Length: 334
Image (cartoon, one colour):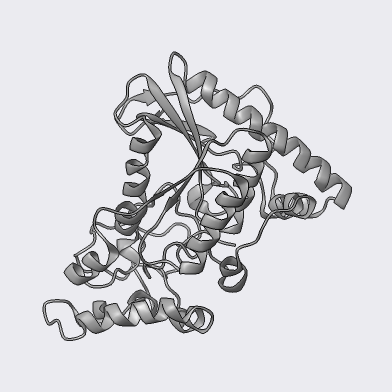
C-alpha cells in the first residue's frame, strides 16, 4: 500500500486497459509503421490515465487546474504538446531554481507564450546562493536536499496560484513526464497518486525513449537547444551529480552559467568554515567513489545512481561517506 504526503494509505486502482509497457528492445525491433501505431495507442492511454486519475482520486472533489510540470527539456516539451493536443492542460509550472541555464528559461517562456498556456514560474524561498554561502556546494549525498529546496518547494508554492493550497474540496493535477524506463528508481512510478490537494499523473510512465522520438517525428514539437547541446534540460545546475569537466563542457556552450558558478566559488574561496572540497562546484565527481543519496525526489531521473548500492544517513551540511560511484548529470535528460 502506498501513502500520500499526509501518510494516508491507499490502493491505486488499475486502469481499465491492459498495460502498454514494453521493454525498449521490443519497441526498437518494431517497424516504423508499428511504432507509429503503438504511439497512437499510447496517446489514447495518456488520455485514459488522466481520466482515471480524476475519477478515482478526484471523486467528490472539484478539479480546478491541470498543470504540466515543464522543465524545458525535450521530454517535458513533448508532454506539454500532447496535453495541449488533447485539450487537457490549463497551466504550465516551471521551477526556476536560480542555478539553471538562462536559455532554458527563455525557451520555457517562449513555448508557453506561443501556445497560449498560462505559466506559473516559481522560485525557491531560499536561493541556491544562500545554500552555497551556508554549507558550500552540494555533493551526491545532498541531491535530495537540493531537489527538495530548489524544486519541491516551488511545486508546493504553485498550489497557491492554482487555488488549491490546503483545500479540502479543490484539486489540481500535476502532470509529469516520469517514465518507468528511465532508471531503476523510476521503474515503479505510479500512474497516478494523491499528494494532499494535488493529484500526480504520469501519462508517459509506459513510454520508451523511442516512443517519444516517434511522437516528435510525427508532430511539430519544438526542441530546446540546451537539451540538444548538453543532453539535459538545464533548469537545474546544482552540481550534486556533476561529471568531471562538466562545468567546462557546459561553459563552452553557455558561458554565462560558468560565470555564475565561478562567481559563487569566489564568494566562498577563502571560507575556512566550509570544507575545502565544498568550495568547488561539482566536487563529488572528483572523489572517485561518491556516496549515493538516501532519498530521491519525484522528478529525479537522470541523476543515475548505480543499482543495488547501499544507503546511509546524512543530509546537506554533513560530510559524505564514500559508498558508490556517482553517475550522470542533474536534470531531465534530453
